[in-house]
Length: 241
Image (cartoon, rainbow, N blue to C red; front, side, top):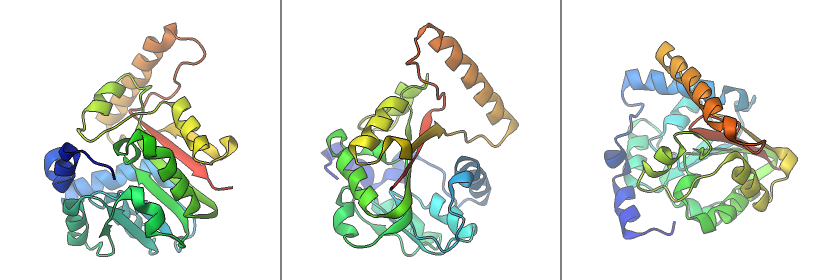
């Protein structure tokens, strides 16, 4: 990844700086898994032998979740050596350190049924995003899916999410996300964008209801081009035709 000195330093100890919870804590493991189940359960492959790649796997939460769900054909990598070490500590010894922008070099011939890139796209240089997505598309089997989560700039808290992480480079709306996927080679009819609802508690569901309400109120003055998705993240699934 093309990185400034600031971002290079940040990625060296990314978890320490962002202070994100990990599945090493049993209580947080349960909460994280419940959240991932709500976000992704309908998009998980029905075949437990499906080949799955997690790009920018972070501390390994998704891979650990998938392993617990019975998926065995897993691969993943992250640019942060600290995150890779955390993955190894929780038994994900196959996780390696690598750069997402060198995906094409890393997997010149291998193909996957599903590729996840959750909370990754916003960390890439905007000028390299389309080529990264095109490489991910090439790494899919025909009929395979690329699943992305990225900050939603159409959310009323979008700018907070965009600038709350020092390594974020850009953000997307529903429209610009679809445009980007098409620039990368996906067909419009093969791209689905939906809200990323992740609450698992009564308080969380109350916050989601409040977010829906203020989103509608704020965008009442906007015309038909107003954003429809209120969540702080967009969830995108693109199928390789």
